[in-house]
Length: 150
Image (cartoon, rainbow, N blue to C red; front, top):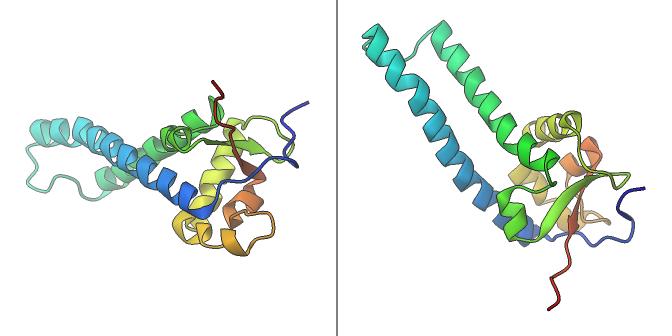
């Protein structure tokens, strides 16, 4: 049996926005590195004046989407927390209290894109359980972690 999701406290709007900002800064760095690893060799080998156009541009965009998915999916599946969530002491679980699978992570990322996460987060104060639309639609729940007692 998993975590008791019904009794868990939810992180508030400000905590979730802070974690998202932290994660977006990290993701920006990862995307910059990922882009550099492709664009510099492409330009050097092809001698192209336009770095990417046509099919190479489409493949590059799909590659960056893959990097974004891997960033979030890795952290959500391995421990239920991105680095921003860890800093702000909350994690993600499924509705049944179990850890997320790769399919759960993909569903959550898809719903976070279709209902843009920053906008969806502003629904939290109005939801009786403190959930964003992408939480409900992906059947995942953020839960607040207890402070370590010394």
